[in-house]
Image 1 (cartoon, each protein chain N blue to C red):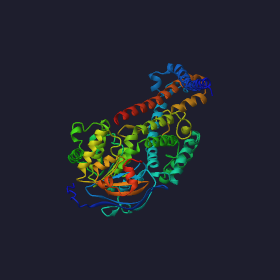
Image 2 (cartoon, helix red, strand yellow):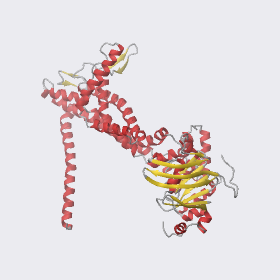
Image 3 (cartoon, one colour):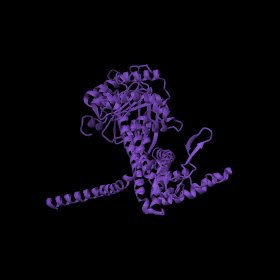
Image 4 (cartoon, each protein chain N blue to C red):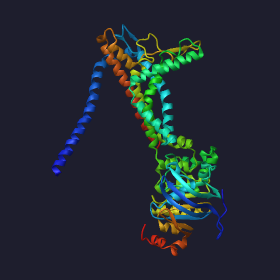
Length: 261
Length: 309
């Protein structure tokens, strides 16, 4: 497990997007975007619905291509290796880049089996080792104390917020380096949202986090960097406090102050 | 249109639809009542456990029940693995390319082929081509190249295959995309997603569809007409392993079958009128068997639905 903390002021690039254009069939969802995601930092992507936020982060673990016909121009570098290279192993890529989806999507299995699902894919079958991973992952996603006595119960019985934290635990169980979060709180109530936000604050010590959100207060609260996306183009990308207090562009200011979106 | 007129139309169409629904139920009840009323009288332990005697005007129908059960089991063994695998290929791997579209179109056309054509194809392909071919290659006397249970079961399997494939495809497609995404995002391979997420979610639907299609196939006559079923057999299609004295079903033997038995009693018997009570009794047994299969489908569905919660 990684324990190194990001040094104050110093930042290490984990994911680098270079001149990325992304097409669904003929429709161009992302238009020539370049930006970086730093290790042990939270980077938020904001913008109105349909601007390509989700598509942008999903381009990192290449998950869109399982359901859609996609085409990509440009490069997405993970530790300086283009994930669109022909020799990339998608299984390994997706282990290193975990993902939490907009709606909690636990498997209709027990809580334990949900978390153990990933490790089992990689052939971890030792009961003791699995127990360790399950406890560790649930503890990291701040769910352990709530579910430790009912690990064998169905995950479907958990509340929405608990389900989402379970999905985070499930993603953490395969020891990823990057965590993609696609509006992880949009289906949750304010209390559950607050818990997830605390959790993100905690997780960024270990992971590179990219989060899509339509909630600007949330971006301001939890992120170190923010990118503003509009119609598939990256309008502005900077340190979060800069974006929210002193945006470069007029259109960014208009969006942040709620004049559209 | 005035409100009054619209209300009249509304009532009228509701009445028409309800009438049609009742018509369906009435037809079903009519058939059942007639069969039960005429057939229940002849059913007794002897009828179920004895062989026909006296030119089928007396005795029981045990060989036909036995043959029906055997051929249905054999059909299940042949049809379900092929059908389910083909459906998995089509939904998970084939996609929308040219090849996948050709397979899909073929399956839809296969479902529309009349069952007697399957019967003739069964003779031509399974008995004469495959069976005779095996005999010739291994230099056997006429062993595989004649009508037999295995070829009849294969022909029936072919008949129910399109239904199994389509119902399995539906079950697979009803698994939420979000669950597939979740598994892929954890680094699962395609096969792991199918094996660990899609199949467990879809199995109740797959099983239900498969059993329903098989209960449909179990009552078919045309496909087995020339491929293996017999007018009358003095013995059961059973082979006893020498020395060990263990009886096993012999798939290379011919067999008697319920629906065919009804057919020959009604049309080929020297004294069709005298066999009438037995015809009704046989029909009742066949209906009861298919009903049992359907019932097991319902039970499976409830069981798996509970388990996947």
